[in-house]
Length: 254
Image (cartoon, rainbow, N blue to C red; front, side, top):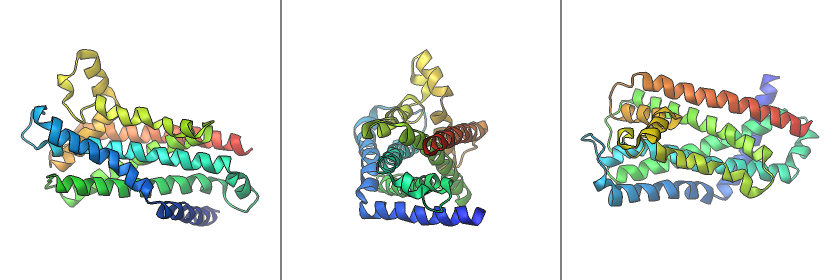
């Protein structure tokens, strides 16, 4: 049974990845906005921002840009899933001996692959702009692990949106608040510079702990409890979103 699910997921993932390869503008478009934000903040606004540390501003703000890249990319997952639902692909798959869960997992894995490619492009541009880190291989793997968990968590939220939306615009619109969330966090300025209520929200929302953890790993500094808070947020969102997505999917295909 497990091998059957894995085999079906592999085949359907290949189908989804081929769609992306035929239209690579999806990945390019996902990377354009974060790169534009990096250029704006580093070369226009960065000189007026005091982060309270000696590190370059590109080093300070890159973790937040990476999260914005992922938040932008998962909108396409909801969009593609919505099109499959509207196009009758799910009904066609139901008439075939295919594991039902493999249909969703194919979209999730495709999202993970495409978003990691977009993240790699953004990091490449950041290196050209002066980003530097002496992080060890272990630290890079830690950063990659956090980004993978974050991508999976947001992707399952995208699955919920794709399954529940009534229109194409509604399927992707849910990502807008997620893209905006890093701006009310420690991603671009220290939370201590914000007004009281805003600072409280910024310090207690998931993006801040994730950004701080990635920043510490890049800077070869102790991560402390921030890492556990970040992991708790990612795993918690992932578990809850997965449960809701599966419940909605079963209702849709029953």
